[in-house]
Length: 434
Image 1: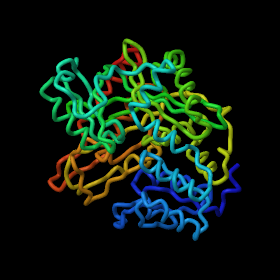
Image 2: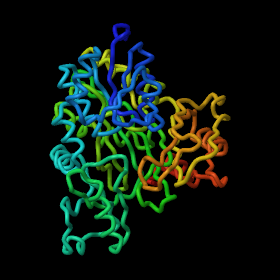
Image 3: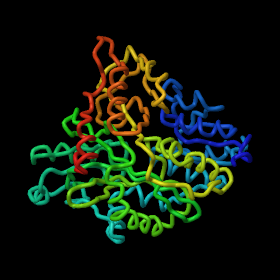
Image 4: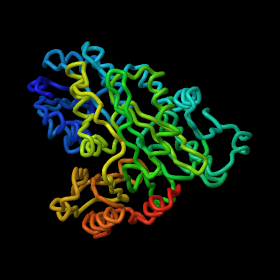
């Protein structure tokens, strides 16, 4: 179905580890891949190593990149994972006159949390209560806040700049930290919802919007809820039917409102005892490589569809087979690590296990990790499939026991093990355990 892509030349913006899966998908389709960003040290730009060609040009220098693309026969531009990359890729595509699934206006709307929340309210999407969207925050506003709250930049992703505050004395540091990570100098202070976090992924083809997956996310307690890094992801979510009843139509209405015609979008939110709330979205590929999960269950690979779109103007296939109700369970296990320099990395026992697939290791001996509470501390992502929650539990225990990441002193760098009882409680009782 993708035969016409062979030999075409594709530019991918960004060279981080998670871009490798995008390069590999393009190579499977016979596409020649060029990866671009300003990282001149290719040890820090692993996607350039697996691409056919790498350009050391700052991705924000879009005019320069456009001219280089014209000289080299590039006929498509894509990216994912970062709103900054997406905006740059959109501008490069505009300069080349080639298709791009999103407009600049759509990207700005979806990455700005204030605009996003205002639009959600218009279409009946539940959102957390917010206390302010300004900086500095007045003392009167601070005094009227009900804790716990989450403080974050209004325009940043990757869990950067996020702090959960349980008490008033934590607020000032959290506000300054969020402000330091905001490109626009704006922050959000909003209620901290208690429940089970989720990601809902939508595939969009010619204006038709399909719910592809809803997963439940479990947030680590290792850092005392400081940032909210993810520890475990399960699909389908135990509350999938409730999500379809309560949230699916409003979110589709939202996507129609912003005139999303093609591509992929995801919504992050919380399943609570008070209902389903949404607090963030991205009109882009997210960092969990959900295209592999969805393809494994439905044969729909939105990564390859996006590649097809940017090179031909068409997503290539329809969404008739798309279905969020999977047979069995699929789980993603992110491995987060503490600060240090890795010396020993070994997960060889997993490579021969039939229920593990898509093992994406982004750490090698010698890599230095900084404790900043962001997704930079996620150094590995693997996926497993099982017929039951009990079986999934067994595979999880096997994985944790056989993933070794140690520093120069032989210290285990991994976060503390995830309490799988949280999954069991939710799937047996239908609870809202986070």
